[in-house]
Length: 116
Ligand SMILES: [Zn+2]
Ligand SMILES: [Zn+2]
Image (cartoon, rainbow, N blue to C red; front, side, top):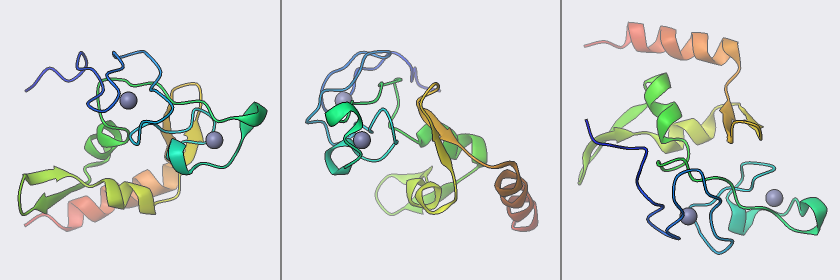
């Protein structure tokens, strides 16, 4: 296990708990969870960067949900594309995605039926 929660953001250097810089392509919009540089919500005229929590946004949730795929270069890794494809709502309090219970149930079922 690596120490995951004390690394600065690899792009903008924000320490865990700090907000990303506005130009950072890793940063999510604080209000919507969309990629900040692509977000157009213009909350209070401008989007806020999200908080860096020591890991790439969504990685922690992929792990909780058991979403992995095998990348030809890095090997088994968290499947952020799969996370992106499922229904979810952004929780601005926790700065992460809330996954609906029925979706979690479905994913759990998928996992238990796809064991080799
Ligand atoms: Zn950053
Ligand atoms: Zn926004």
